[in-house]
Image (tube, rainbow, N blue to C red; front, side):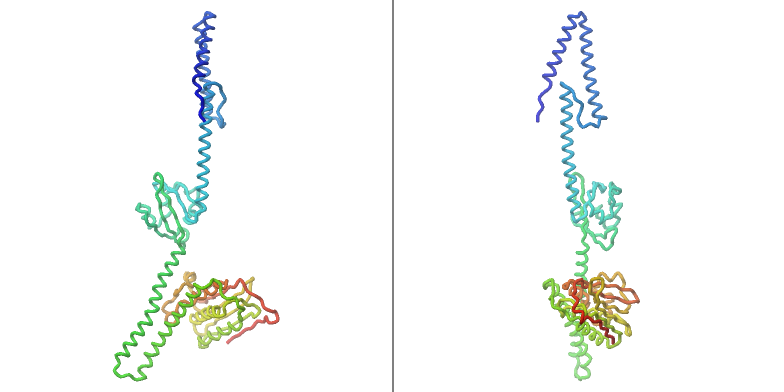
Length: 442
């Protein structure tokens, strides 16, 4: 809203006042003295109003300026309106800043606002968690002084930010962060930190998978090719001379067949419907079957004990669960020395049903445990290959359990043994009359 011009009225009042002073001076005979007194009074009035304005601007905590009339009233009102506009503008900016911070804090990525010198001006909660930043203690610090990874320092100084880099999080080496810098505004930079740990893990798995599957297929193919060349070079073939090459060829063909079968099974588990069948499972019968298979595979060189609580059962796909449990037991037999012990228990505890396979093998180093269920991942690849394993057993077990609403837990202690636990949060208790506990020991 435009304010009317106060000067015509102010000039009119000044001229009228001057005329009155002059008339009074002429009538009193003290013209000069009266005029000087009037001018002094007007000057004092203006100095007084100016001092009020200066004091309000410098010291007063009041929102509105002092009240006055005339030209000074118009000046005070003009300051008041300007102050109101500035307050409204600050409130709008504060609201925009608040909304920006709320939006930034809702982002799944870490966001840091940097100056052109790399000083941190603001960051969201995710950046605090990813990069171990403390607000407001770290505000104003250069980010290069807090994140000292050499790749990040080179990336920050290069000025070429078209491609992001990946570095481990300062407070968690297992977390992989993708760092990107985006210039914006007047010499401003925005650093974006995204957690790509899962993508990095999947990329590592893919790379390892390609390398492992190539190795797994190359070994039996090399053996078969060598045997074929050996047979083709033989001038006269005696049955006894063929027995060993044919045996080796048969072993490698069987190994390749098992590998392909396990890959197909794993692919089917991953691509089929997320939930398996829901048929009642005869757990005692299934566990006795897989235990007998393990004893046969062990050639009775291990002490295998089976403990079953027949009063609990689960629903699912019999063949899938049998395959998962069989893989766990075959691993226990492979990695437990002869005369070692393997305990198989099916029981209920703390509101869950659980199948545990505990062995007295050499144990597994802790840093291997998170990756044991990856395809082809092996703690000792040389020994696993000699034992004829495909490296897919635990991956299959993990997917089978996931399809049945269960999960696999692994604990291990070096030179003591390992325990693989299949945890079923959902289970059923069958009729109490048939709920007996059986121990089977061989």
